[in-house]
Length: 388
Image (cartoon, helix red, strand yellow):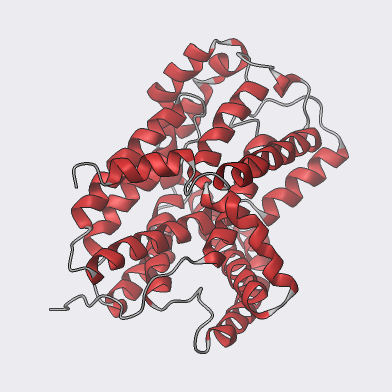
């Protein structure tokens, strides 16, 4: 039986994590704006629009959420380990914290049906029983999840039975049920639709597209990174960052051509679809690991890289910024607000997203100059330790 031993070193503020979190939330906001907040209704698109879409999704699609998920696991480790160092068990308090995160997610659904917080809350509860397992056990569980077991199962099933169809839990039909509310409904219509359909959409879509298993995997990887203090400038970490970057590039050079060609060569629709999902997840993982290691190396090992600290305030208020973009984006694109979905192509939407990020960034700097935490971050902390 493995006995959990808390870290002997203090878990000081991880500046590199704040920087990465800021990069991730900024990328997520701009992708959501390009997508018109999950409302895929666009005016006639230009060549520039298509270039913007392809470029942004190649650079950010799936990678920013992966970074966000990784850092969620890291934060869980830090909170749990800090309490363990005091001789306290954080697990029940974390479950309580996840219930409040679920509440924040339901609030988010009132404005944006693509909420991720509800999925994070559920995945957090799945990871909770694993937090005190040994590094070796966590590694093997994480590796199993990284292999995308659902997709592997469908590949094998499809090879055995050519009549098997790709995994479809019905998220597409639910997306369609929201179109009227998004295009010309009131905010109340969007809110009702978000609760009625959005909650199910996010879970079903995450399972269909490999995101659910990848999220749990990344939570576990974040815990392991916390235990090994990967983002601190300690020991041989600079060498580890360089090795990870090199390994990530080599993995990407191997996966990318396979991901772009192999699924199209397979006639079996189920196998082809599952291969595409699985290889896309692996490609995103390789790119995410490169970004994380590159930012850690630049920040800790180069003079110019230290300037990245200016991004940290935006990352420290990621919950506030995430819910804020839902309200702002919904108002900008949906029919109950400005209804710009009718006029804004991908290039213009990217510009609007960049403006949103910039305004949020300056708000974060102003707020944190007067407060220790962001407004929703502070509220979540108070609710976490309610009656403690």
